[in-house]
Length: 468
View 1 (cartoon, rainbow, N blue to C red):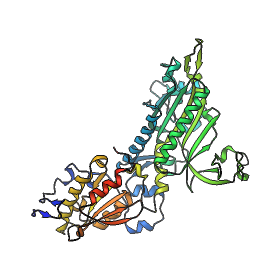
View 2 (cartoon, rainbow, N blue to C red; view 1 turned 135 degrees about the vertical axis):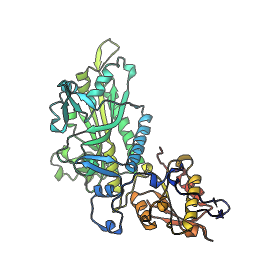
View 3 (tube, rainbow, N blue to C red; view 1 turned 120 degrees about the horizontal axis):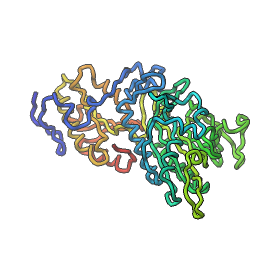
View 4 (spheres, helix red, strand yellow; view 1 turned 90 degrees about the vertical axis):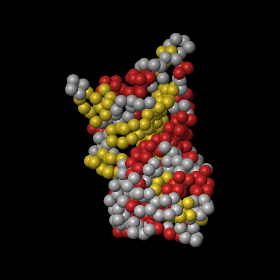
């Protein structure tokens, strides 16, 4: 069970072989220690016509519990937390304060705003043991207004921008499209409080620009679209749509001024070919709604008595805005747009893990031991700085005879690690070459073992990645 030290090169030395019983628990992140319940990874699945939701389940990212209800499994959850961190970073830059609110909301708040009956069957309603009515929050304008009403007194406390990222609930009549139309989902919602309409519209502009920065960091083609305020109230509203051939909404975009509008808000939209603003040509696209902004006016501040005292000692209702991004909806839609066939591809900034080191071979091949030790040494040299928690080793070579090199490579391709470091026998031979595969671009290159660590660090030095 032991071998002599083997010198691969002047920088990396293969240490003595150790017993394998503790390989999963040695302080490095390994595939065997992650819960990734894959179902189909054979060559046949690559050509099978399967839905996007099935691909995510096959890759061990999601598991449906009931219609509209999903287990978000470790790999996808890690990406979701990275997405949340990206959102948090942009909200901090505009003075946003993050908080948490109860998911269980008493009916009287919604009755005061007039929405208890208008939202209809989409709202989950329930009674407690004392027969008091509650709902599971689909949105939190009423709750935030109640909170702020108890503290706001001076106009010097504004602008006030509060947000949360948490679960929301809607009783979809036909849950479908995976996380895009689920009954339970994660959402980021921000609420702005300002002294007057002009200040509120300035907050509206600032927050929408922050949303656009989020989508730009994700490298997604998202457009801001004029929309209808609907039951939310107010006279200004915009949706953010990810352009997608299978989008549920039809939107019109001017090819000159790039003004965009949801067809639902325009009469005779099907006949529109010319932009009303600049007379440019109007093109039709399909989009997936992933965010929404509303200028609310005083609808909710009046219902909850959210006021401040002005210079004349008068009580004035504050002006409000509401801004949402569907976190799980955005994650799901991004994966559907970026992925190829049954190969998951992530927005690079939120990839769950950026690098997977795969030592090839099998338990019957003595060289696999040296390759695995080499993988450990590479891990220790690469997983530093911003890559500290971004590297994972596929260590399953010693855990199951049924998981061969081909299976491990196919699974790594399916999960979509941005970079694969593939260690074959040539890494131990005279050439001392290691294969580096960029899964986003498809480029493959052989790099000398002495240069692989520096090369990786140079690639990620200026790369925008979110780390946990």
